Image 1 (tube, helix red, strand yellow):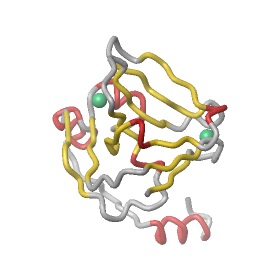
Image 2 (spheres, protein in one colour):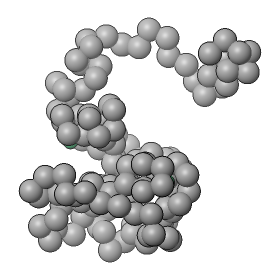
Image 3 (cartoon, helix red, strand yellow):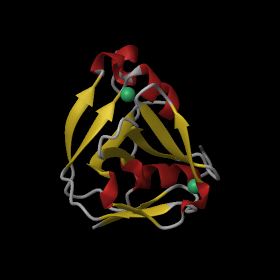
Length: 139
Ligand SMILES: [Zn+2]
Ligand SMILES: [Zn+2]
């Protein structure tokens, strides 16, 4: 069982199934929705338990799918086909623990930000390095 929540915590969820992979989609819609790419874990929707759905909002993002997000903080929750398919792509970033998940599908790689910019990051930083920079007041 995995647990997750949006940025503000108004929406929290658990999943019963044990996915071992995640995917990333860099299509135009996912890029604009997320600012980069949509990374998700695919599970049966019936395996998802939402603790408090009061802030869950959805938009029909295409003829075949909806996007879920938190109405309080805007966090992306899911991509879900609306044609009766059983699966849902839950936002990878919701989960408290990402261990045991392997990067599987990467779609529209030619549209990924790094591909569009054609450059690797110039100054990669770990969490500890970011914290240190903020604490020193230089960020
Ligand atoms: Zn939220
Ligand atoms: Zn996409």
